[in-house]
Length: 390
Image (tube, rainbow, N blue to C red; front, side):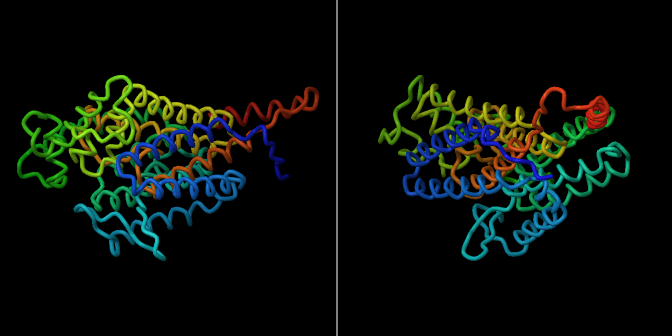
């Protein structure tokens, strides 16, 4: 039976948080590069439209197409490999019908949707060796195609999201501990090999970024300059910042100390021009978006909805941490945008679409039945279903 939607179940809190964060980003983008501000506003309008369409569509109907979603995801990434446009030594964009976009950004959302349905349909046998191997083999093409663009940062995000959806889906703790016992030593060995002069694991510029992170003083005037300038800019903002659209000759945008600051280093603009207050507000807004996604997930009607919400919350949380970690020098320079804040229409519209699915889950949460209408047998069956999902 089709569930009747109630307006009081619509998550206006999440909508307000997302729009407020986007507006903050639009203000910072306008200050960094005014000519791009109108495009970001257009991206928000398109994103809002797509978000509302998805929110009022039953996510369960869309998830039934999980195999076409997976195939479309692989198809778009393959198009980048063979027909993609290159920019800054990377081939990450394709143009269809005059629209240029970056499939690696939408790939993260499509991957969450695919595994939400895939895991729910196999939750009873999730921890079997066959299922685990199948899930790993299915994520490998996405990881490899993004890594070869090259886009190491996004490929790392794919692995993080994959691990998160497996955890939420109910993967055994024994599998988790066993995997960590293998991954941690391998990661240490890989890092050691990457630091060698004749390594072939990553691109030369990626190795240089890691070396600059480990020894910032040595590379302060070369590879590490952008990151060091970002740290200086954030610190110079002090409490209230220098003000948006200022023309201070020593600022990041005026002095051109950071190339394309409206994208991956937008947090440096916020720190310099809005100060500690603006920086803290940005972090709090992103944290609240993640927390709200998790909250909606706890009330989902099924496992697929829970995976979608936790996946989107994790995407915003981890990607924000990595981006801000880069701009403040805590992590090597990676090239991930700050969710809802950095300039980029593909990233913005994809995130709004993802939030549309979270809103769809929230609108279709189980509705409590009046006291006395539930039989003892139904209560027993509900308890059994809950135990099975756990």
